[in-house]
Length: 338
Image (cartoon, rainbow, N blue to C red):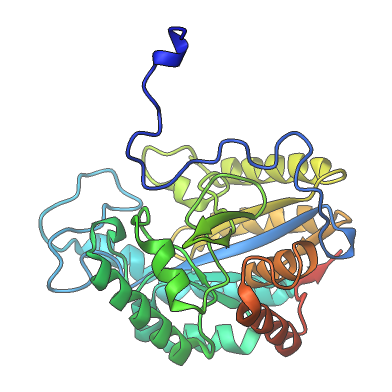
């Protein structure tokens, strides 16, 4: 036995096994609809009114998203007003842009936020966007007892179905997911995917309760949250530059292997005028290219499961029937083709 053989295992008592191999050198060996090079998913995080500090029982509060002073121990009315901007003005600036370019989007929405501004849910239903549940409200999911997390998932599903016209088919935690999250989503039975990962440029599978489950990774890189104090976006130009360079790289690589680009947006952040104009410039840059598929996250999930991995891949017979029904209902694959 060599010294290397005697080293302790790096896995230890991990609850999940990490996959550091992924699709490897050849990539996933798949194509998007219409042989597109890249799938672009615009994610609008709608959270206003569901943040920490928005309920009387909260014991902690959101840090000021545009300011540099430390989080206090009481309700911060300035921070509240910044979140209010997202609900009152920013979200509708994004709505007008989506409508103008006829682009689909996915809303990472907190159930409580939709309840407090029903017009947002009405717009999502009217425009045909989809919702990836962002929790009942903002909370540290990894600290919740299993049964409480299960209850909050059920609350979110029921609430979003009422406010947005359809149940969410995806899930994304506000904070890191718990060790129970994926099992609870699988047990609930109505979710096609979760986005609680940043591990790849395209969807991939994980094993949950002995069955494969779809993960559609999110991104904190092409994400307007980096405008926060101490982060890397100091101006609208820096956001635009990062997004254009990421798109150009992925579009070029997509000639031989499919790529996906997620752009994370928030009404209170990108909805500010100068930043919204940078987003407009990026959209026009992407729209000037061939081989681009603007798609909802639901479209990406349905395509990956039905067209790439087979109609029953990772879903079981019931899940496969649900995918087929969803596609028939929505006319999927939906989205903007170029």
